[in-house]
Amino acid sequence: MRNTVRYGLVGTGLMANEHLRNLALIPGAVVTALADPVESSIATSRATLGAAADEATAFTSSEALAKSGLVDAVIVASPNYTHRKVLEPLFDAGVAILCEKPLATTMEDARWVAERAAQSKAPFWVAMEYRYMPPMVEYVEQLRAGRVGKLQMLSIREHRFPFLKKIGDWNRFNANTGGTMVEKCCHFFDLMRLIVGAEATRVYCSGAMDVNHQDERYDGKKPDIIDNSYTVVDFENGVRAMLDLCMFAEGAENQEEVTAVGDKARLDVLIPEGAIVYSPRVPLRAPKQVERQVVEVDEAVLKAGTHHGSTYYEHEKFIAAVRGEGPVEVTAADGFKAVAIGAAAEISAREKRAVSMSELGL
Image (cartoon, rainbow, N blue to C red; front, top):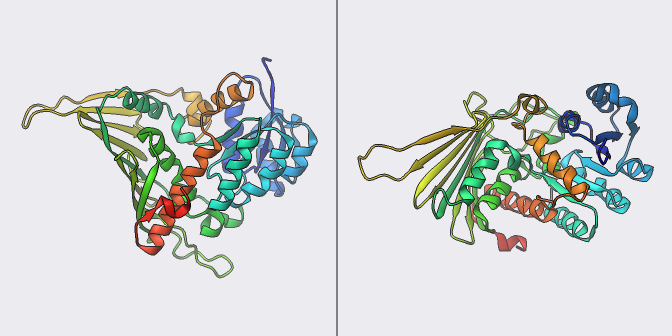
């Protein structure tokens, strides 16, 4: 087996099991350790591993896993608010790390992780799966090749299902998630930075919890997470971007729709349809010249996860970085900046005002 890489997982919930299904498709990836204080979660991950479960030793903490010497790389998929605590012993152990988004739930913790990762010799990668959806990869390549001309406007729409249930219901409260604009939307703020090629300067978000979770109570407390919002982000190069989020629109044909408009054309990508739609400018009343292509994704890869194949392709890149055969493509600094835009959006929604990124020290 070429360059075997021993993997550990910290946190064995829903996303961790998606990672496990995809690692099973990656040559040379072997899962040797699992860490989670919840026995039922460990049992679920063992079931996902199937016959390979015998090779995985279980631990109750990332510290115990880190001290075991059983791993070369660790995937952190524990609840958002635990990331800093979980990462501390992993940094000390010098292992490669793939950390699920968001990097952390607060600016302080995210900055600490980014600074610590910058000092580490081992690869540190933030799991921004949306970058690796095959239609999105092709879409970004076409934009970078100048297909729309000079980019001026970018809009991202995600109309989807409500947040899923998690153990302990931790994802129902801003204190645990950093807020929806951090927890969920850091993916899209990362995509904005990737596509626009510049840093955010100002954020305005109008959002609230209007439909979901209204009748839910946990120890007498009502959830406080945003379930719909519009967020406008201004970038330093003059491009403006918008995120349209609705988490009670699971009937939509496409869950994600991204539109980029430049001075020469408009370009859309639709997921899960997989279509890229090119619409060049034409004279008034002239026939449209729309072109459509569909980017196919391998069926086995699609079945291994719920992110349109992206988790598999992300793991291909990550294991190459662990082996020293490729760069880290999504750094802790990228993760920090995505958290920062999300944090600014949360402030904006609460205080009903535009927030300058300079207020957050950026």
